[in-house]
Length: 561
Ligand code: N01
Image (cartoon, rainbow, N blue to C red; front, side, top):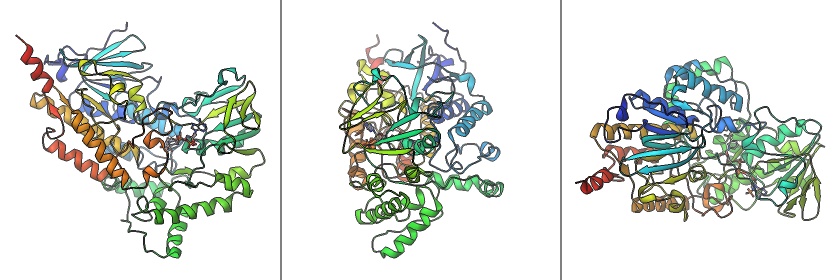
């Protein structure tokens, strides 16, 4: 067993109720959230241990190294805003940063703020158990190391547990297969090889054009066609960056109160009643500009009004027809049956044009589903597609999957997996009943993934650490939600979603992509601005309106002689 680091200072070091713990705060995950948690906590004098399964910091940007991986929110916004010095000194090279560049940035942050001393790499947390006597969390890891802390924060990422389809015969496959979220660090040489990609979500749509350039032959196996719009990625000029940096703080402040966490210069008005020709002009301008926001925010009612949404969906369908040469392939690639944006809108570089290449073939799995994997390829209803490499771009057990992958036990041995069996729920998306002092970053019931995740992460980290700091100053040992408040919040999240077009798609937002996962729309869809105000109000009122404070301690104290 490795020796646990012993920290001084903070709550643990001051010999309070939770004084025997290794740290005040244990953090699971060293991605964007985990790094900022470590920084924010230590700045306030708390001690922190961050446990990370990967061999480097980076979280999702460490694991997702597939060809073409890059962010789909502009780099200047998809980055930390907490440090003016950091945002002034870092230079993003492209409008949408690539995975290697984002990983370099995260490593820079770890060094710049001296965070590595709090982080244990190559350490996967397998279980977390609340000790009702000591009022501490004990985290067990795959290295046999244990860490105890007064507070535990799950910074495990909303998209970190790969969803690999359970296809019969995969073990017999004599070629190689990879999930995009576990792409080998050294890359995969696809030159001269036959490659099959399963899945056409954001990941597949980024990877397919890159793989097509390298592979001898590429077969794309598509179950559901997706809406995708041009990213129009490009290098960022010095002049452009200087302009952003001159007023960066103001831009960030606007992002913090924007519904999607992405700052916008204009407030859209409703599209209903706008003549079709004017709408089309707006869409043409958005298509030319590139990115999701110019189209999704062309009108304020885009995600609530079916008719307005259909006008944009038709526009994108027409574009697909114009780009793809073969009419049958274009038809197979054209999405129908769900509103645009109800699944996350994909951004691409040459995705649809890739199907004009002679070495690329599209298989429509709605007509002939995959039956099995054979020794040499993929067998659908009528054809065996022989291949050397299979790439699964099949997504994630999203939002709740990384937390339930850990055996989390709260009061009276309550299992989080069991508690969430009928659907993940957590008050304000931050805490689940029976799990005192356990916080979730971007958990179910928070905006989670509906916009600029960086803005959501920074908000959660600040709220959580400020909460811990406030409890510490007030001498409160535990905070937790109740089943009633979890359910009330989940109902509110459902009601908000029901007023939008989101539930009209079968998506991972509601767990639809993982067989057996309970269906419940997980993200809070009323926007970051509303959510932030609600969380701030809870804090301003001392947390007691939403959470139970010190309950464990008093209950425990009553039992004491
Ligand atoms: O996953 P997805 P993703 N047989 O679930 C198909 C973020 N992200 O990794 O739609 C055949 O969207 C599935 O088909 P269907 C971003 O938030 C961000 O692409 O279920 N096919 C679908 O086509 C994104 O939304 C960036 O019918 C199967 C695909 O696999 C989220 O990650 C980049 C199948 C999965 O699509 C997830 O995107 C990339 C099966 N058994 C990703 N199972 C950035 O730019 C699944 N599929 C930041």
